[in-house]
Image (cartoon, rainbow, N blue to C red; front, top):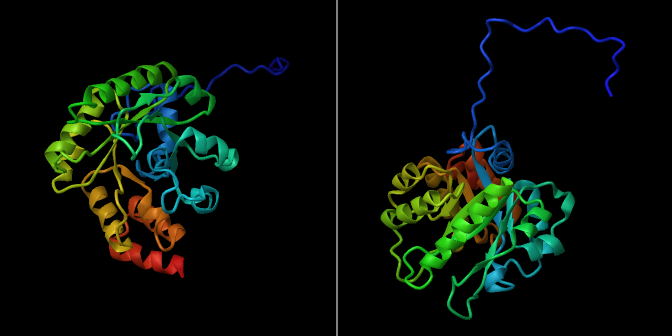
Length: 290
């Protein structure tokens, strides 16, 4: 209880001075509750409004793919350079040290693997999400897939329902099937559907005309790195995406399969947060990796 022996009446109320305006740095988040904003602020740097997410959830469909054979050896040294970690609950609980103090975007759906037909997923229990104190849930949407589109959209809005109850943001991840055209029209459609169904973040792919995709999406768009590219090309991809309106990247293979993963994620970070050109970032990559 407060000490009441020296209780002083307030006098400095600054009458006539307008209340301080608090602007929020995450696109589309101004009207969200405090808890939701707090979690999004862990993911998106308040100074830049951007994020470098490190994705290593690939094992839930691919198993021990190249670069993720030993996550304790390949990923743990990279954590300090990432703004947010995207992984599964099994890896989070078994490998990631709880004292890393990094926000987690938890892969919150699972189902089929590369051995069968992908995208037949179900959601994990929201109680697991709460117990692990994650900052966001990631749920995949298979827009344009005649078999799984409706099911994956339903997974998203159910995740949004649960997340809204506990102020946990949801990231909609746009899947790309064999029959889907990888252009701005498709990615714009898929990204907007994520946002329309309540996603607070959208993860999609960069393409020609990406500025239209980003502009038409009312929440932050982060780009997937996709397949492994030469380091210079991957940095050019980051640069173009940021310049065209992306709020960050969620990269995996282009980092952990790099010839120097720690140098690569530092170079990506410099492009996203410090506006380095691809040429400058590539020089940084070579210096950090030497």
